[in-house]
Length: 188
Image (tube, rainbow, N blue to C red; front, side, top):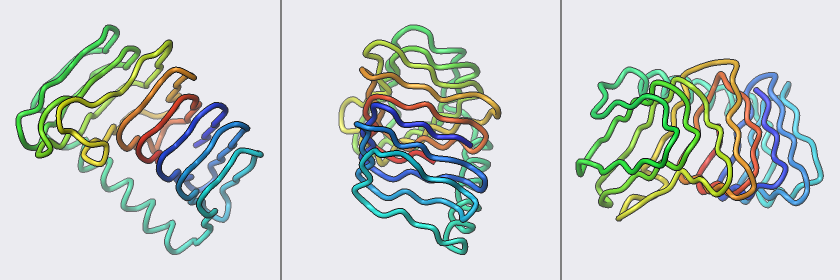
């Protein structure tokens, strides 16, 4: 997995899998920690406000947990299903666990709205390619720590641009990342 940050602020952590790479370019900022395997590679002159953590035992467990979370999330029964999201969409929660299946790509703003009791798991078979000022946003009382975007494909690229804002955890064990904009959550 390759993660390229060029004009991004991540208000959270980044995790790099075995054999992956993280390139953090100026003026990017990671406000949390960067976790990587011993065979992973962190480089670039961007700002890392936390620590660079290379701990094979911890990371092996983190990787197993991430893969387990991805598999578990993918196996949940959808409460709502969509095809590709190519125009702005707002999804209103049910007050509890919301499992959203997106059978395709996300190329436009997606807003998850509800109460503080709503938890959203968004399983995406395709990739994310945001442009302009598109967001993966929140509405009502939904918070970023209650949102998981689980990308279930492999070989694609999760891509955001300077005007984009993303809320939630991005879990994509089989995808690469090319990130600009602002992230409020974690990238794994």
